[in-house]
Amino acid sequence: MAATAFKLPDRATEARAELDAWLALNAKKSLLRFLTCGSVDDGKSTLIGRLLYDTHTLFQDQLASLEADSGKSGTQGAVLDMALLVDGLAAEREQGITIDVAYRFFSTSKRKFIVADTPGHEQFTRNMVTGASTAELAVLLIDARKGVLTQTRRHSFLVDLLGIRNIVLAVNKMDLVGYSQARFDEIVADYRAFADEAGIAGFTAIPVSGLTGDNIASRSPAMPWFAGPSLIEHLETIPVAAKAEASEPFRMSVQWVNRPNAAFRGYTGQIASGTVHPGDRLTVSRTGLASTVAKIVNFDGDLAQATSGQSVTLTLADELDIARGDLLAAAPVPLASGLDATLVWMAEDKLVPRRSYLMKIGTQMLSASITAIDQKIDVDTLARSPATALGLNDIAEVRVDLDRAIPALAYAGSRALGAFILIDKVSHATVAAGMIRAVHAGARLSLDSDEANRIHWIGGTSPARRATLIGHLRQQLQASGHPVMLLDDTALRDLNTDLAEPSSETIRRAREVARLLARAGANVILDLGANADQSHPGTYIDADAPEADPSEDWVI
Image 1: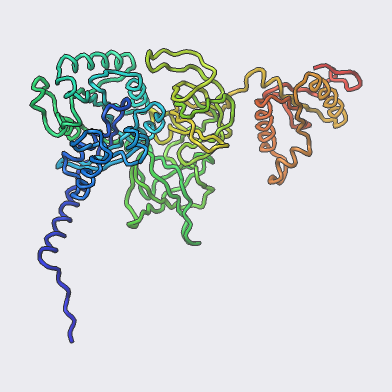
Image 2: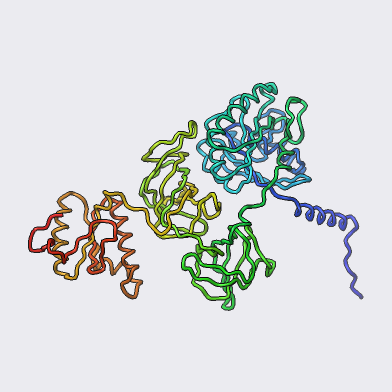
C-alpha cells in the first residue's frame, strides 16, 4: 500500500503560519533593556505588573492565577494585585517587598523589552546593582506622598555611576495625592536640584499610577495638565543608541578553550567591543603574541563577521599560548597591576583594607586588595570625606592592588573590561562591585612606609657573612616583639619547585610573599644572595659592604 503524506488540518497550518509571521515580526523589533528602581514600597513591582497587563502579555492561566493569588496574598482587597506578577518568592509575598531581581519580557507593536524589577530596600542595594549592570534605561520611581528619599538618591547615583544615561522619573501613586500638579512639580524640582548637583545630565518626568494604570499604556484623563507621553509611549520611542562598543577596536576575553578533538582548537567568549572578520590580526594581551583569525564559528556554523555582544568561537592560524582569561584584541590594551576605582560595598561585614580578596573581572579571577580609601561619598549630600573603613552600601573611591598585571580599561570606555566584583576568600560571598576609573600600567601600587620597613633584603657574595648578619638582625627584630619570618634557600626552593632553574620569577614570587607577610604585620628577612638588589620595596643590606662587619654587633 502506497504511503501518503501527512497533511496538517487547515487551521493548524494557519496557526503555524501566524506564529511564524509573529516570530519574524518580533525578530525585527529593537530590544530595550531597562530596570525599575527607587525606594522601598514605591510601587516598582506593581508598575511592572501593570505594564505586563496593559500590553496584553499575560496568558489566560496567568490571569486566573493572579486573581486567585490576589485574594490570598494580595494587598489591594478585591482589586488585582499587580505586584504578584513579579514578586514570586514566598518571603516577598509575606513582607510585601522585593528581595531578588526579577526579569520579565514583554513587547508592543513597536519594540521588545526586558525589564528588571530591583529591590528598593537598602539591605538589598547589591541586588539593584546587579539588575542595573546590563540596563540601557532606568525607571526611577518616587512615591508621590513621600517625595525624594535617601534610597532615591542612592539608586540615582548608582544608575549614573553605571553609565545609564536614560532616566525616567516616574512619580507614582498620583491617585493618592488627588492627581495634584503642584505636588508633581514640587517633586520634580527637588529631584532636579539633586540631579544637577550629582552631575546627572537629564531625565524625563512622568506622573503615573501603577495601581490604576494612569499614564502607563495611555495618557490619563485624570491629569489633563500633563502634556507629555505615557510611560509605554516614551519607552517605545526613546532612541536606543547604537552600541558604542561596536565602533571600538575588537576585544574579546577568552572564556573557554574549545578543544573537542585533536583537529580543532578554538577560543570561545563574548565579544566585548568591535567587529571581527576572518583574516583580522589579533594580539594576546598577556604575551604580546599575534596571529590572524582563521574562522569565526557559532552554533549555526561559520560566520563572515561577528560584532560586540555576540558569543563566538575564534580559531587562529597559529598555535599560541592562550588560556581562559586572556584577552584577544585588535589594538594593544595596557596591562594594569594597580587600579583607581569607584567601589560599592555590598556586604554586612566591613571592608578590611589590605585584606586579600578574589577579584573577578571579565573572565579572569585573581587576588586583589584595597590599599587605600581615597574618599567616601555621601549620597545624601554628595560630600566626599576621608574614610578608613566601608560598611554596607557605602560608595567610595579607592586604590586597588593586583597580584599580577592584567589587561584592563576604564569603565567609561568599556563596561565589559572596566567592571569587576570582589569575593571573600573564606565565605565566597560577593562583597563589592567596582568600576575602574584609571589603570596603573606597568607599576604596582607601593606598600606604605611601615610595611616597607618590615621587609629586609640581604645580599652579598659571601654566604657566611650573610648568615651572620641574618642572625644579628633576627635577634634585634624578635626583641622588638614582632614576629619574624625568614625566607632562605630552603623556603624559596619549596616556593619554586615548578621552576627548572632560578629566574626573575623566583624574585617576583619572593617579593609577593614578602609583601603579604609584611601586610599581616610580620618582619620579613629574605636571603637571595647576589640576586638581591635595591629595586625591591624594603631595606636592602649588602653583606659585602665594609660597614656590615659580621664580627661586630650590627644595629639596624
